[in-house]
Image (cartoon, rainbow, N blue to C red; front, side):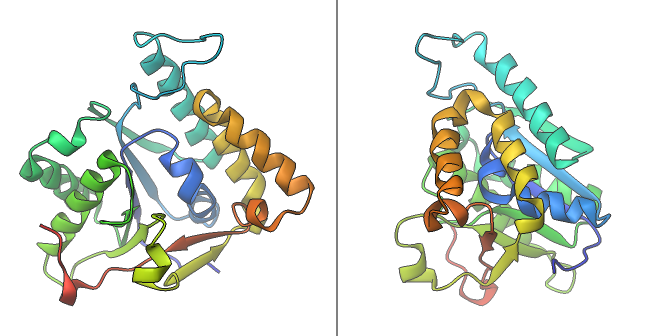
Length: 228
């Protein structure tokens, strides 16, 4: 059972980040009546997949991905979707204080009891890591008595070796079709993976099934904070 929260704030850099990692959790919160805001920092306009034959150009991809993000939000039941207007594949070059302030402003406005984002150091992509740093820095500067919980998504190859087993595992089997629909909404980037995933689900392949049976999160040790 997913715990009740006052308000959940989800922050990721790209459309489809939420679908792969936390769409089952998002849907579960929304279905139990928890207010939820998703702040998507970019439109993923530098996504590598333009199709073969091409279905998009660099100029048209942002609009395609925006429409996909709106469709994914609908699939999950998200009513408060924030498109933050930053540029894809440049977040690592943004001023750290500007990034932290963006997160701080959202927290001050929404007063969430839980923030979900990537876990710093284990998020692989430079935009993911920049987002994770900003979230952790914003939360670190808060009074611990009023700091929201942080659930981080970590998927680097050495995650369990260094962080151990996940601190939180959400059983999302009741909403697995909602998760698949969120992933299907981002079809320009997910078509190949979805094909393999759905074949694996039909074949009861354990690696495929784990995508639609649970979502895994790590909490953050504020007493051993090393983010700079």
